[in-house]
Length: 184
Image 1 (cartoon, one colour):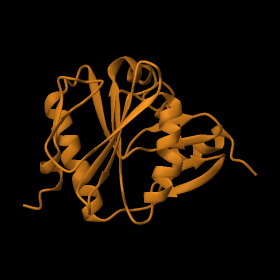
Image 2 (cartoon, helix red, strand yellow):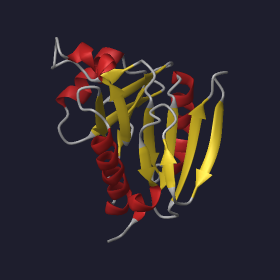
Image 3 (cartoon, helix red, strand yellow):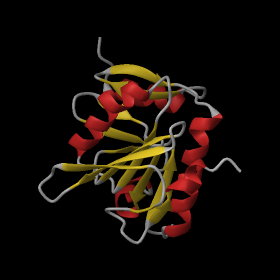
Image 4 (spheres, one colour):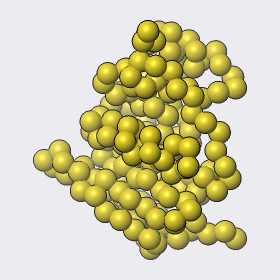
């Protein structure tokens, strides 16, 4: 039986131990991840935070839910939310944190337990939402795949194994990809 949106919100807001996503109307726990998975996300968030005006953007790290059609609600590993979208929560800060509007940037980080799920389920859902730039970091291969929404609504895919990447929807922001994977 599919879980209603109201039930899903109640589970997410009341559960203290798990992070839940909604996949096709069914609850799916987002598993705990390894240090090798989490560290590039923290480093990416740090690079974003230092380049974005905190009055204009929030950087989410395993927070917030991105709503997609068909009973889907996913928690990205890293995401950038414009203040204009997040402002709805100022009137009711206890409100369930969900975003239906497309975001300028979000990232999923590959892991052995969720790698196929991210590519087969989450990234296509983000594309259907119309998110402007979607990244998949692979921390063990030290690679980056990007999908950037074009004016015609289609996505251009690119691959990187290092260097500096300028964001598509936030062109004043550059990310040092090598620094995401540095072990020291």
